[in-house]
Length: 171
Image: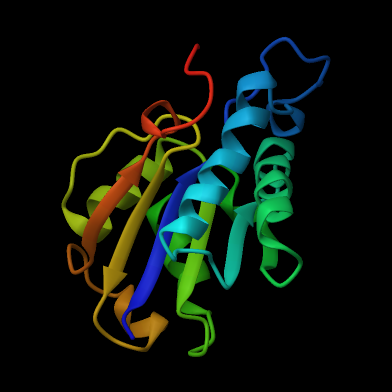
């Protein structure tokens, strides 16, 4: 089975919160609505992750929590400080450490790093707005090897909450 990687940007956060730092900003109403919708769509497509590597920011952890409510407790989560404002190198380092039995992984973080990562992995120039999830695959069974060379992953789809079938699509 090929390795599958979901590169997902956190759901929409609130700029009106009383959080004292960017790291502490929570999701807003739209973010709390979109995260579970993306999780349900990933599940319906057969792309539920075995493991989620996530930034340790409030908004990414909240995005994961809302998504995991749709998946159950068997999705392992690994908060990584280096994913907060990280990019391609941090994603590659995190993914390279995954066990061979984990065939579907999600890297959950922030722009501009996640948009740059989609390009690095696939060569695809995709805009990654909030709660967008790029679905990638690589023929192979070793994460460490799979992340060594750029543009070797296939981009299958980019899930965008505005394009999902159900729900209210206002901004």
